[in-house]
Length: 69
Image (cartoon, rainbow, N blue to C red; front, side):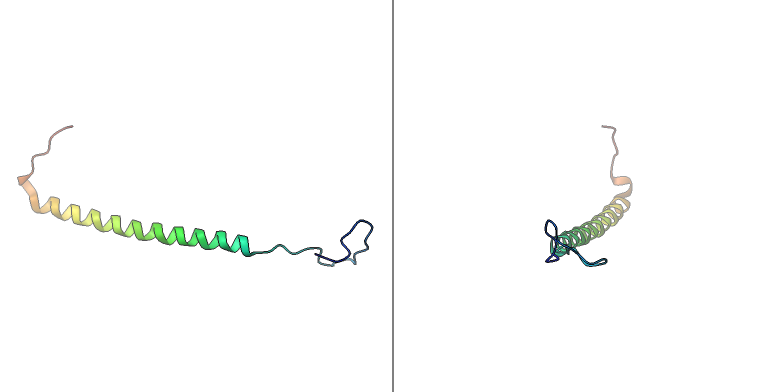
């Protein structure tokens, strides 16, 4: 914070009045990136599970009887 940023203080034109501490925002960005990475891993796992289930279904072929629920 500029030292003259007080009632009646004179501040030169273009002077930096205050600076926001970016740490809280950086923590939020880092947390969002971690959540995205976690979601991408979960997506890849589920895509792999889908492939396995599809192959199992194909291997079973006519051995499985499909019924309406």
